[in-house]
Amino acid sequence: MNKLRTGSFGRMVAGGGTVAKAGSKMLTYYAKRPFLSEAAQARAREDAARASGKTLFAGLSMLRGTALKMGQQLSLETDILPEAICQELAKVYHQVPPINRAIVRSVVRNGLGRSPEEIFDKFDLNAFAAASLGQVHQAVAGDGKPLAVKVQYPGIAKTIENDVRLIRQALRPMIQKDQLLPALTEVVSRLREEVDYLNESKNLDYFSRHLKVEGVHIPEVCPELTSSTVLTTTLMPGKTLDIWLAGTPGQTEKETVAKRLNEILIKGLYELHVIHADPNPGNFIIDDDLNVGLGWWISVV
Image (cartoon, rainbow, N blue to C red; front, side, top):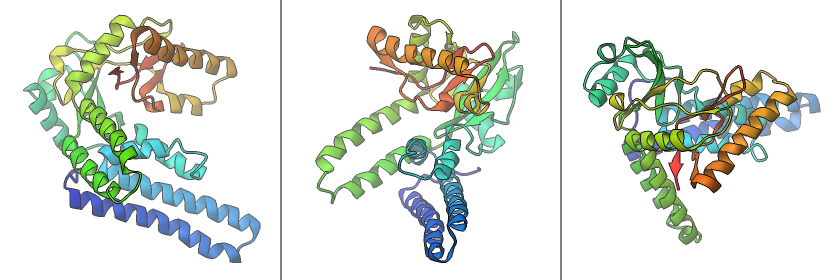
């Protein structure tokens, strides 16, 4: 991806076009269904849902920001959406197409004052994970320590403001707007915090110092390599939770990881009064010893 759509009109047109294309694939299936056998209907429904999901993923990936956040939520609605659509949308956790290498260099240079090649002993310009607001690169510090460098998409903060403006306009005619607008205001506040990597680094540091759970690791922030748009931490080895589960671990292994995830919530909320505010599968890293590495976005409440 070389250029992010940030204007309200462009995002509205692109978003509307994506929804229309995805919907047309399902409508085509329903038009053909009366003429198909039961077995053929099942295959056609699966194919249409898969194609619709791919269209949604591609369109949301182009928009990023608030649109991809919505995609993350939709991927969890397995009781509403076909499984094939949810599977495609699950890619928004960390498999979004990355931005151009030149843009990555520009963001690092603007955020840290020097190019990545000048700052790090090694810096992989190919992102190993990309999501709604930024993407993550592997790097090596001068002392040989492996690092993860999260780079924010240029202009992403502006897209949030424009998307929210569009949503407010859409809600205006609805009779439930008095109930919905306060919730939207809360969502906006959290998103504004999430594009401030200095705030995120403070929250990570707080969790690192205070959350003590056996088998749970929290990345250490490198403050001298962090700005409002670039966040550098130690690298958490392992696989994201969704990929780890796809490897069909045994029941004992799953129970061990589930227990540690539960302890993160219980101890964080009731002892520290903090929560992990973006608990999607891409934000939990499971290593070979079943340790859980806690991902990026943490919010103090």
